Image (cartoon, rainbow, N blue to C red; front, side, top):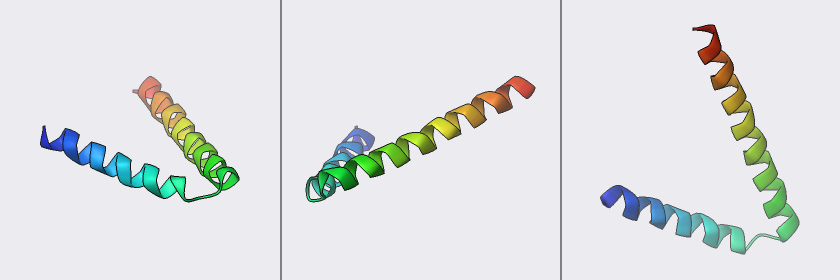
Length: 51
């Protein structure tokens, strides 16, 4: 339960910070994070195939 409260608090802080940024900057940051997560997922999937 404490982990859920901490996660919601962190989400609120991040969304509050994004609300004060201009929309193009927020979208660019979101695209950058999405690309990083996609690269991480592809790398993890490739490493599981070789095991």
